Length: 253
Picture (cartoon, rainbow, N blue to C red):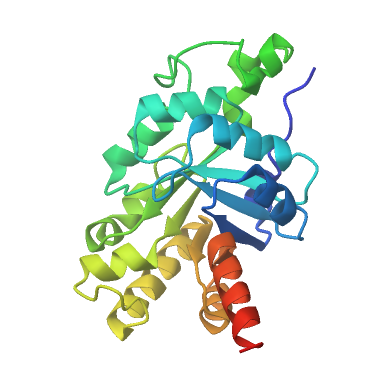
């Protein structure tokens, strides 16, 4: 059995625009529905949600026949958390709160077997199809995408060094936390925040490194795409459910 192709990583390398959705509800049924909605990728979040590993496995299984590639955000840039996610079959990771090149290198090391990294070796997990994937230990890194999240002014100041760390496939800007770190909590559209995002995008575009972002507002999303974003989350399952059901109820009252 061959190691499955990571379509999200392949499209990153090809420079394709990929439209995604944030998923925080922790439901395999929701994951099954949204994976077939036409998105290119779905972010399964464990940082700001109640999602745990058994739930994530069920969600990935539910997404298996959909159009969207699963990406998982661990709760922290932690080698143990990352190891468990990788062994469970996660092949694209969004690592939160990466502040500098050293932290980026640590994230990459957690996804690589020795001597390139520190990932614990096993071929019995779901990632290796329980031992059926030939030469998994030697080939796994080729199909793992490491995306690091830039979400503070400090990280923005280090963005070029972070981007040039070997093994970093892409960077993702977090507008909410970035605006908070700049003194504009809850105001990601502040001109200073937008200028910082634009400068970061320009740096990454010049380096040829893919950049992504979360944008609930369609105008913001389109502007980020014009600035060069290659993977953009344009909403979330929770917000879609919240807005849709609230509007539906209000339309009858």
